[in-house]
Every structure is written in C-alpha cells, then in structure tokens.
Image 1: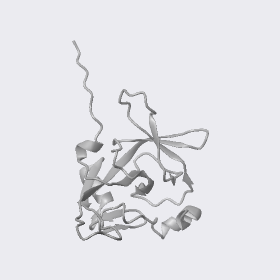
Image 2 (image 1 turned 135 degrees about the horizontal axis):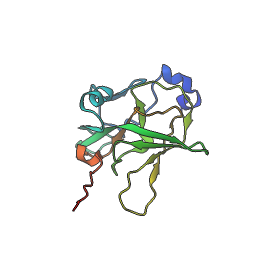
Image 3 (image 1 turned 135 degrees about the vertical axis):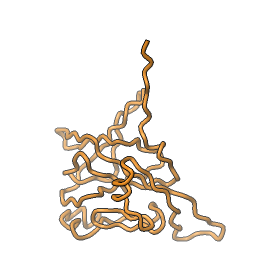
Image 4 (image 1 turned 30 degrees about the horizontal axis):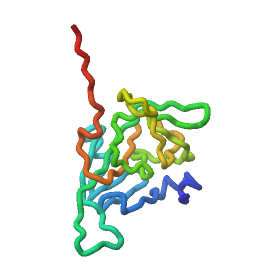
Length: 176
C-alpha cells in the first residue's frame, strides 16, 4: 500500500509511484500524466484519439547479463466510455479499447486530471466476443472512486503491440 493510497489528497501534489521495470525506459510520471521518452500520453491521446499505442524501448533490468539487449514494449491509452456503479461498491468501466493480453493492469493510471477520491475496486467490462467466459476483468490496481466518462486510462504492455491490437473489431452483418 502506498502513501497516496492511504492519503488520496496527496495525489494533487505527489505522483503515484510506479514500477520502472514494467514501464518503458525513460518513463516519468506526473500528477496527471505519464511521459514516455518525453512524449506525453495525454497529448498523444489528444492528437490521435483513443485508443492509442506508443512503443518504446524496454527499461533495463536491475541485474542484466552481458548478452541482454532491449526489446520494444508499449504503452496504451484508452478512454472510459461508460461507468456503472454497483450496489456492492464495485465500479464497472467500459473502455473504447480491447485490453491486450500483454497489458500490465496492476500499473493502470488515470491520466488527464488529478483525482483525490479514495481508491475503489474497479472492473473493466470486456466487449462480447461470443465466448462463454466472464464478461469483465477485475483490475488489480484500484482506480479513484470518481472515475467518469471521458477519463483516460494508461497502462504498460510487456510486449510491443500495434494499434489494431487494442481497437475493437467491427463485426459486419450480411443483410439479404
């Protein structure tokens, strides 16, 4: 548990801590943004729309062998499309992106605004893909309780992904 989780009002002046091994090299956090190699994820989402992906070089491990060479990893930004609050206190979010299998969801961040609300349990409602699995995915990292439509969520991916990996596929119906 971090100090910003215990005292959420500190988020207005202190960025949330991050695990540098899970984010790309040269990643910095501010109170309302994530900068990857000096590229603002809020600005990237503003220019290209969401969902968007930024690929950068992997951060070096703490102890690395001589033969280690960096590979590409990515950061994805998605927008909250819909928020539903259940009676049990769980917040269900619908995103404009598909969560890739390489996403590190315990590092998810709210970017674009500063929230001093207490953290709450959050689940992401996955788009229906025809499978019989669960329709949602519980986020390991709690998001602020005041998350709302239009908010931006940023998360790292431990492998390089493409834009088409996070865009929801369009299913066309044939009409006769």
